[in-house]
Image (tube, rainbow, N blue to C red; front, side, top):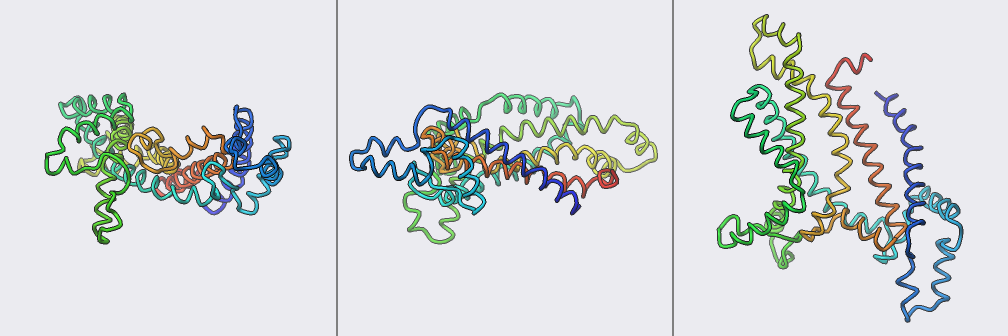
Amino acid sequence: MRDEILRRALISLPQLLLMSFITFMFIDLAPGDVLAKYRFDPRISSETVRQIEQKYHFDKPVLVQYGYWLGRLARFDLGYSFSREAPVASVIAERLFNTFLMSFFSIIFTWLVAIPLGIYAAVHQYSWGDRIMSFVSYFGMSLPGFFLALLLMYLIYLCKDVPVIGAIPIGGMISTDYENLSFFGKIADRAAHLILPVVVLTVGALAGLQRISRGNMLEELRKQYIVTARAKGLPEQKVIYGHALRNAINPLITLFGFEFSALLSGAALLEIIINWPGLGSLMLAAVRSQDTFLVMGSMLMGGVMLILGNLIADILLLVVDPRVRKG
């Protein structure tokens, strides 16, 4: 396992470099100027703008700029965000926890619900329960997340006089009186604000994962080793959970690697609609303002999370599937 991790790390480095190079080139090709807000500010002299250009090498060719960015990255310096007027590391760290919190709970609820539903639908194929879940899954997969968020916000507003539903916040991450709340009151307030975004993210992810788990289980249940296990008189629960599920779970573990990388990418449109201060909306704002270093820092973090997610998926496969270890 140690050799596999080392091999992955050696392969991942060129991938990250290629991703960063392509991103840097696209930012340079895009119209606009990262220092536009300084150039048109009458309070800032042209000499000051020229000093900033020289300090961050914006006056040099794009390949030279990229080389200087790599040099700063080697010193663990992500640069300065001109749109936020703060170091990129501190800007990303400020939003990191917010997006992680929302996405983490979404993934937990998705997997806790989707896998059992997929198993039930496969075992009871073509039953009324399977048909209902298939309809709900197709509906959830075809419904855009931002539209579902708007719909739920409208429904919560209509039910504002209902004791439980009306108490669900429809925007933001904390209430206006958050600082005056007790410790447990602050936890409850954050939990209440998490309900809407977590439900929206879970519905879309749940629909797809439930269909995949159902399809994998159906494929395994039709194989000869399952027929043989049943012919030997093994209990149905052992056949399903001890044999079929162990083999059907492998593709889902691979899928988990990609979902793990999405922890930090967030849902940009959803964050904008519900005014959630996360990395997705930050990334969109950075691209619009052509904030080179902030875009590069966000891209780099997303790439690292993608590689870590795939690595975690490979390690989990080594743990749950002996055939992978022997291969």
